[in-house]
Length: 614
Image (cartoon, rainbow, N blue to C red; front, side, top):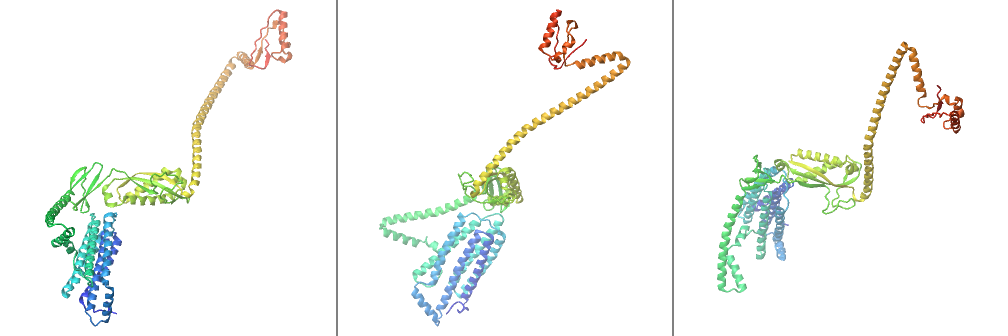
């Protein structure tokens, strides 16, 4: 069988095509690796655009190979191949080209969709990847020159057309490289470069599809680039083609000659309007470009100016300002007074109560120090304090805060048990969590300040929620009893302290009183002793009277008149029981006999009674 290895490789066209194909495959592989390292949409688009280069060069090589086979009349396999092609009626090369064209259509629409609707990706290592693409463009330039020189010497139209396509790839690689370099300096046109490359792939797919359809219509074998995309687009505005289409429509609709002339005049007017509309569109685009030099900053906003990626140090006050048009200077406006909020841990579904035995949406479980799983629902509020740090270091603040908060939550939760986190020390660990997150944000120079961390809910998994509710209820009852005990303690302790203070004060006063009284008695005794030494008779009598007074004090006394006729022995009858009826009767009888009424004085406070003798 005849293949590329057995073919006459002395043919310079095939050799140039094979060398170009190998280099393009290698460069495409490098571009996909660069996309893996950078994540740039422009690199992704350029890598797939290089795949279209591979498809084009492959079809050119196959075409050259087939044409070389057709020139070899002594080759038996060529006749068998021609017989198979006649039976198939369709050239396999055209079928492959059609499939490649459809595939490139899908790739182009995918790139355009990502360019306009996908989120902006953060490009990693933009400077390094940009330099790599600038170097790759020299490889495309080498392929372009190789195919162009070979096409000129060998007289190959296919290689000449493919060389123009590789020159376009060289320009696109340079644009991609420069876009990544200026991205490093703060100007992001990655999305626009990707969209432009997507449009180029779409145009190439249209070009390939149109040429394949024309080849199939004419029954030709082999792919030939007969019409470039520019020729296809310009042919739509060709005067003769327009007149032919207009005449065909008029004949189809049965329009008279007079109406044809009227329609022709309308077409002329429409052409003039289109021409002027182009001028007006260009003027409008120019005015729109100049309008990018004006910008406004509101009272609640802060702004900064970047000139080719470098931040201007000038302070921008609220009001209307003037700058250089895009892309020379770019203004970035921040709403610095607005408080932003991000939910971390778990996020509950909207309009759903946070009840422990109900599913809230997310089920991201954390573990505590006592090996209990739980689901925290935390809301973090923050605002931008330094717009320069924020602009230079932050691209997705919600993702950054969420990741930092999740890491610090895991580190904090594994050091506390569940009920400490859920009930007893909520404010303490929330304050500690806020401090840790703020330190992490400050270490990254984010320019973000946390304003509040609120705990929406903190509950265990659904399967054990009921048991935890019972435990929490018991804990709350225990806490209520302890609070009542603390209240009672706080009430009784001041009263006890006051009573102790009064008792201590009273004891101290009584002690001092007794000490002073004892000292007085001692001084009195000494004075009496001194007086007794000078007047013993008087003092003795005084002491006797004082002793008698002290002895009969607080006792029941009966005073009677000896002349009353009552004998003292009668007073001891009945053992001097005061109130005895017999004693009273005897006293009354004796008084009646003597005619003198006795005087009786009774001290009711003294139970013991004794007579006093004169």
